Structures are given as C-alpha cells and as structure tokens.
Image 1 (cartoon, rainbow, N blue to C red):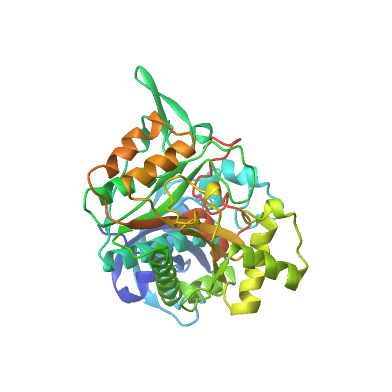
Image 2 (cartoon, helix red, strand yellow):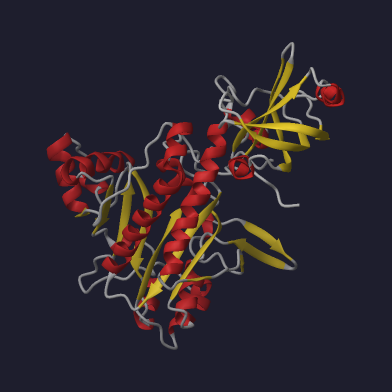
Length: 438
C-alpha cells in the first residue's frame, strides 16, 4: 500500500487510511491520550479518547510504547481547528507496534552539549533532529534543481568508474586499493572521463557521484570522500561560457529552492534563501589583492599572491557585497603553474579558468580545457606526467571539440547555503582522516 506522508494528510480528510511513523511524544492525560507521530515531512496528532470502551485495547498497546518506536495505524483523518499541528488529528481503530525503541544515548531534540563525534557515531539518530533532517532535504532539492537545469539545457547524465588503473591526477593524494593481482586507485574526480565523453561526441555531460581525496586535511570544508556535481560541455567560445552557465544554473536552482522550500527553511532553520542576480561579478586575481589592500588593509607578501589565501577568500565575500552587492565573485587570471595541466592557457601563458567564491569560500575551480593534442602533451610533460596519463592523452588524438567545465562539492555548497559550521554536518555519513565508521 502506498505510504501516506504527514504533509499529504490534508488531502484525506474524513477518509480511513493506513499510516506509519515514529512516535515523537506521548501525552497521557486523565480523559485522553495524545500521541504525536512524525515522518520526514512533519508531525501529526493521534487522539485516543479514554471514555470510549473500544479504545481500551489501543490504550493498552500505547502504554507500553516508548518514544521513537515505530507504529502502523488504521485511522480516520479528521479536521479539528483546535489541534495546533496543522488542524488535523488521526482517530485510530487499529494500532500495530512495528518496532520498539530502546533508551536513546542522547536527546536528538536537544543537541546542546552533545559532542559532534558522538552525534556522528549515532548519525541515524542525529538526523532525526528537525534541523539536521532539513539540511539533507534541502541538499537533495538543490541537487534536483541543478540537475533539472542541465536536463532542460540538453545535458546527458553519465556514470564513470570510481576504481581506476592509474593515479592520474596526483599520486600522493589518491587512495590505493588492491585490485586482484595489481594496484588500483579510487578516483579523485570524473574529470578525465567527462572529457572522454566529449571526445566521443556526447557534447554536454554531467555526473553526481562520490570522489575520493587522500588528503590529511582536518578543516571544516574538507572530507576524504565527498559528493561532486561535475559537468563538461563542448563547442564553447571561451571559459566565460562556462562561467555563464554555472551562474545561470546556481541562480535557477536557488530560485526554485526558494519557491518550493523557502518558507519551510525559514521556519525550521531561520534562514532566508538569497536568490542572486545575474550576471555574477568578475575580477582578476591581481585586482582582487589590490582592492583588498586598499579597502581592508589586507597585505601579504607578493609571493603568496599567485592564489587566493583562506583569508583572501573570506574578504572576497565582503568585497563582492560592498562593490557589487553580490554574494558571488568569479576570480580569473590565475597563473597557469598553479593549475592542472589540462587547463587551457592563452598565447601569453595565462590560465583560461576561474574560481567561484561564495560567502567567503571557493566552491568551484573551472576552466576551458586544452583540447589540442600537441598542446596537452606539452603541458603534461611540463608537469612531469608520463605513462600515468597516456590513456587520457589518447582521447585527443582523433579529434575533440573545444570544451570546458567545472565541479561543485555538494556538501560544501549545502554548508554555505544553510550556514552550517562543517561538512561533517551536511554529509549524510562523513568520511575524514580519523573517521571510517559508521
């Protein structure tokens, strides 16, 4: 039988239904027992009148039920303006306890003082918290709308291997695994395979999938396994086409998210979804540092100005707000030596790529890719890459259109969107240097 959720009960007034959910609270009064049931869409009140003789069996059952047990009921959906939970109550005629919960190790409704590691050890309980549940529902919706934008614009979703035969992008940052009689590696990204798809003629592709980085980074925004939203598309004029598509996709997704969940997000998390305006502002790296010094007295050694420091990223958010009234900023004109060999360079050696900074954090490194065989072979040699990338270089031997793309970390995006302290709380199950369970 198809599950009816709390947010659908209003469509079943005066109907007899079957409903299942968690027991959120039991209030046993003198003349009546109120049971609050919940699922991921909300809460509803079940009312058992003690004066009615036929309810004694139901009362006996519920007297032995613990909070967070699950039950299945047959009940009538009744409209009652006196009920605070949506003006609806369930009047049961049958109750079955489908699982009885033991005493919980902590109260997930009051996480103040509960150690984060303890919460992660019992992640399935931690997510029962309304705010934590909302984080994952929002993350899902955000990905849904980014996907929707791409499907609407002719993209094809692909699925690339996560076990690869060569430590292709950076041997020191990959996980090695035993693969029968030889070594294999967990993929850092689908980058090479996205480009392979374009060489095959698919033209516009994307993937939402796990990536693995063997980096011993213990920061609020890093993880050893994370979900990446990757895309690549062909026949671009230059990297500005890539930037424009990303800005449009993010704006589309945030607009749709605000329309579908904005009120609920405000109610549960007390956060307003800020829908950006197009186009997103763009500045050169050298001009960024010049403005940061002039506006905010941020001074660093010139040797550090070939990339954005963590503090510079934070200040770029302030600069974007003050100068452009935007939460976003594209930063361009990075030196090529700081970026991957497959990023295109112009005749003067300048990188044809960008970073996108949102709320003080880099969420994307994107670029036009090098598609010319002779140039990409030269770039690989400059980086000291040889046989490990031979299979990748072969993609460009037989014709490949101009193309570019980017990737967004879903967990980091959600962290910034909802002002969550760490990706540990936006990932469903966090993986970091010291955490391999549950």
